[in-house]
Amino acid sequence: MRRLLPSLLALIVLCSSCARSEVKRLVTAAAPEPFPVPIVELRGSPADIAAAHARQLGEPIRNLFGAYFGRYFENALQRNMAMLAATAFEGKLLPEHRAEVIELAHDVGLDERQVMLGQCFLDLSEMTACSTITLPASASPDHVARFGRNLDFPSFDVADKSTVLMIVHPNDHYAFASIAWPGMMGVLSGMNEHGLTLANMEVDRGRRMPTAMPYTLLYRTVLERCKTVDEAITLLQSTPRQTANNLMLMDAAGGRAVVEITPESVTVRRGNEVAALISTNHQRGADADTGGRCDRYDYLHDAAAKRFGRIDVASVETMLGHVGQGRMTLQSMVFEPVNRIIYLATGENAPTRGYHELDLTAYFH
Image (cartoon, rainbow, N blue to C red; front, side, top):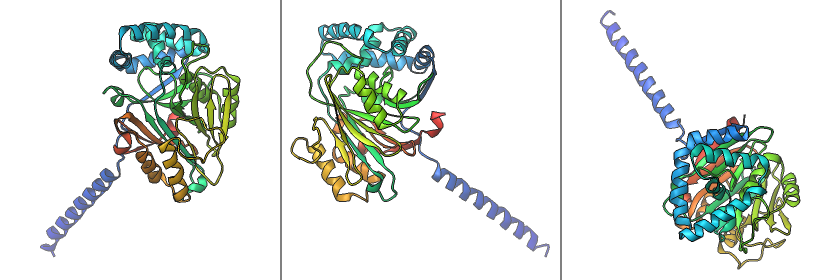
């Protein structure tokens, strides 16, 4: 018996060691991959938000503004004209956004016109390509409504490496998440604490003198002040609009709409429970089905109809991969507004780089 005790003790120690190793292996295997971009939280007054923005991203802001705008505008004359136009936009901002611009410029050591240009340069530019698709709960086997989006934009070997996720808590307004770049206060793609989600698509348009706020700040205003698609449409209809755009909207209840915006009008195409709602870079009015205007639109339309009822997260990601624009697709994402979840891929040819899941619920409190 005494001879057996050492053997039994050794076996117990060995089994305990194996169990610990197995638990460690399982924990390691289950650990989620780190989110691929910085998550920057900003809250408080406009001055507080700007100060936190500058504190966390001051150097990237300065580098991005220099490197990117140095390539985006072809020569000094174009840059000077853009700066002049940026000055004209300043008086069109909401007071809280104007205060944030002033404070951010001061805190990062840039000219106010440079920071303002970061908010309005898209309004001064030609259109670029983007794609969106929203799907009702009935489209998926798990009955979750989803919103897919590719952002296509020239990188100049700069923007593809600079994506950040901003979580902004403005005083007296709704918190929102924006997939953006350092120094960008407005929203191109985002979701707020109530699940209202939006993303824009550029459309062909002429250039105009500044008569309203830059469109990225208009879309930020939507997320700051609206809970539902209907509230967002009302705000867009009642607020001056600077730039023609398509805006996809979806809320936590599954409401969906494409809002085709011009300075003169707002046209709404709503989703139904038996089909995907899609938008790319043409304003189509009520016509959701006629092909031949955009290959990306046609692919999303036909692929969604073919797989309707079986479209899960992976299916949406695959569809976004098919309509990606190669190196131009810098961000690709799938939102679940009801769950406040985002799946995000970034970098050149983003859909090929793998999507990372993030539950935004905790960040909205």
